[in-house]
Length: 253
Image (cartoon, rainbow, N blue to C red; front, top):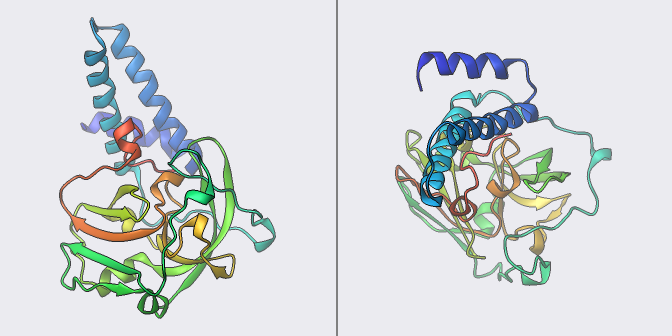
């Protein structure tokens, strides 16, 4: 990205609040794509797909460049918590009955990749870690949102405990419901990014990710994986389930 492009994006986004900034970037992607498609000879679907892919990559880079690791997502009073909290999933039918049943006595979290300590973690060990609580909004790409109360360990603290390479590019999550996604290291180290074990003062319900989920209030909901079984640190891009269907990888708010 050249200096002129950075200046235009920064200047346009500076006056926008966080949710509107994402809409700005998404709309810029759409307008840019339309301009490119109308100004060149796209002779087949494959050519159009390549153009859209290039624009999506640009959108990811622009969002990553604009991301401020010191900017916090808004937190809310307890009276604004959404009850019941909506259920949503990537599988069909979209039913909580299909959420995996995980025995807490047998559960282990695998930590792999660029870390000094690749020990497996039991749920008892994870529960014993220092915890914090946040009341933040979950924003779904489908157009709805809900406010929840989440308690767990600050993810940056967990990464420090396992000796993760903080200069690595990606953190990948592989889940026990076969879902996958990944995030950038800057987001992983954000103070509100959290390994969540409790929801609304109770153990995380099965339909919402038991025994653990990632809470990332600075990203869209599909970047908040549930039923996490493995965390991998690395420099190779791994994408994710929805990213293979064309969803923007960064997907910041």
